[in-house]
Image 1 (cartoon, rainbow, N blue to C red):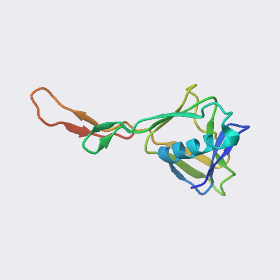
Image 2: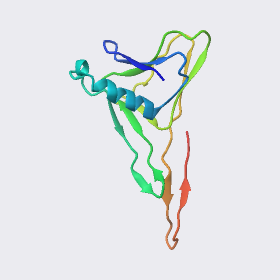
Image 3: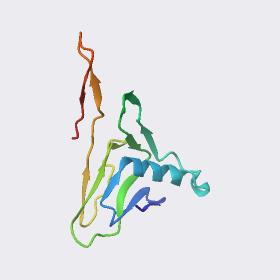
Image 4: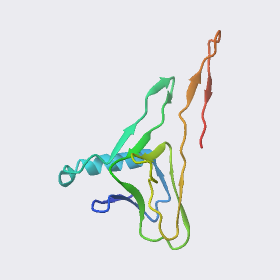
Length: 134
């Protein structure tokens, strides 16, 4: 997975071969990029929340909010129409615009999800765990 950055265009670049990317991979790459000395002058690129314990081995998912006009783009043009998927969390922007940049032969799928939840009704000692991907 090679995630690079175009600082002047505010683009997070995915390689044409990286057709599936997780929210965690994006968050890790952005934090690493922000820590580089030459980038310390940048406003915060993202806000990420999540991984709160729900009990047992259940945790909330990651929500990544791109800040200040940053977008995700494919670096280059794929040979043919290619679907790029971002999954395992939620991706949005601070201004409610699309978090991705459309390009030639690029088709985006962002698999937003809700976190697993524990629901306990009155008089019940155990709950029902639900998970839903939208």
